[in-house]
Image: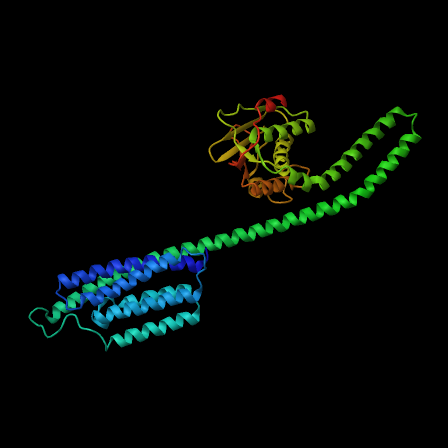
Length: 430
């Protein structure tokens, strides 16, 4: 929502409150004070204001944005209608004359200097004309009913009521306008943070692509050299064993680089809803193959139908990163719990590591920040980015019983899903 749209919406509320206050004051003046004014003419002015307010409220539901000149036009219309109403009810002697300040204050808070100056000149011109041109509603010559002192008391009372009404309206508008500006500032800050985050992610992707391309040549060279060393030292079993180990590590690195090139293709092929237990089972199975030394316990799944999530290779890799972080903290005694409600899914991973310090908890999720003595510090950053793309997030806490609690939140996919995975799949990979 653009700011002028919200300000015009607040203006409709102000008009409504003003109409209520003026209608009550005019009814009191007509029946209690026996004021002499044409109720049909005054009523038509109030009706015109009410119709304009209703049309404005209906216009706000259209897809067209509210521009600054349009908002200024509405404020000018308010000034003219207030001027007509004051002309029919005593002119500048009406204690509600300060209603002319409302459009001016709103203009000064929302519009440019040129439009504000235009509205200020119009307000001053209307006020000046009302000093000489108006319809008297309490004639001074009727001394038997309205003495000069009584008229003065009524004027002071009316000014007091006008002050209360104007104060309430201005307080409401300024508070709402400030809240709107704060929300807009927060959105700008979030957009700035998102752009910075995207720039960091793009830099990491560029670095990864360049590194993958550059590592291809030295890995090929190492393969050739290791093969030649195996041929030259066939009679040394101990050295052959070490060479074969190095060869397997080089092959693993080469396979990993090739996997990077297949990520986009696999990502497109793996899109679609999958049962949450199947997604967790795949991640745990891959985790067990990578880290056979880990010891974990998976809590029983809740009853009822299994929810689905948007399955993707990147999401599985994100869960695998969190599981590896827990294993790096302490590979034994890891507890994993899966829970959900009608809208969200929670995956909680509790490790028995040393926990998080205050400084670490303040910088977690930022690139190149790690809680380990080794590593690049980008795993949690990439994980948080992936989860955000899936309308989820990750948070880390110090558990009351020691260690770190990692909580992943994912939005449930409410589309159709094919098949249902049994929870036994997860139990089989323990």
